[in-house]
Amino acid sequence: MKLKSFIFMFILTVFGISKAEINWLPLDKAFEIAKKENKLVFVYIYSPSCHYCDMMDFKVFDSRKVEDMLNKQFVPVKLRKCSKEGIEFRKKYGFVGTPMFYFLEPDGKKIKEIFGAWEEKDFVKILEYFSSGSYKTMDMNEFFMKTN
Amino acid sequence: MNRRELLKGAALAVSGLTFGSSLLTDVFAVELADAPPPKKPYEEALKEITGGKAVTDSDKVKLIAPEIAENGAVVPVTVEVELPIEQVKAIHILADKNHNARTMSVEFTPANGKAYISTRIRLAESMNVVAIAQLADGSFIKAQKPVKVTIGGCG
Image (cartoon, rainbow over all chains, first blue to last red; front, side, top):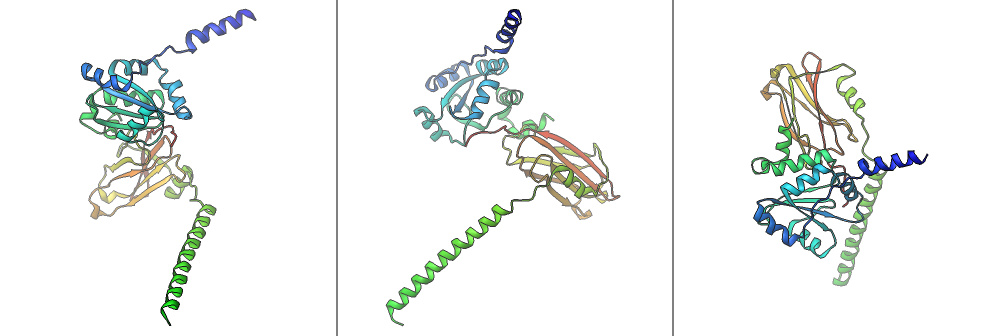
């Protein structure tokens, strides 16, 4: 019985707990880094009381693939909806609800905001639309029509 | 009638109108709450269109819709039937998990020139969008595509 428990705990530790860590940066530093590294700024607005934000945190941002994409191809920022920065950001860029994702140019110009939680594989495709630069030539619906 | 009576009458009329209109609004609201829009599941909607006839998959029906829609309230959908217009009677669009799956039906005449429609539809969740072409010989052909929308969010 002890051996079974040990094996179960070992499997849970090795395979069940993701070590994905996104390097969330403060908003003021993000644009500075984005300019230097020529990357887009990705801003995630969340609320601690939002079930769908928990879903994103535990199922999507916990994924190695999402972690890798956000850390390497974007400058990620996470803001609490009701923090001072969150309120100012929402005033400037608009807001529908949580979770909300914004894709911004290094100079702060908004490319697009996307509302709601997504499954991991779909969120990866959304990130690819921005990281590939496709947003420059076609809108998101057009991009996903071409992936038929 | 003196000025005072005229003002009293006008005040009564205005308050009557306000009360009456709010009462009417309330009545309509209650009626709407009592009778929500009718539910029409996919199978029922399909039967309504085809009368129970078989619908076969066909590459003649070109259905263009995004794999992932950025906004489920306005999902762009385009359908074209690659057959002479004389052979196409109608195009029907269904969304298989919507409250009312029958989303739209468009009938054609040879004057339309081409069996082609482009529109925006609302999807309540991720689901299949189905385009059915009703042909002049009484048969039905279709194409379908899964479209994903956000799982949900907090307002």
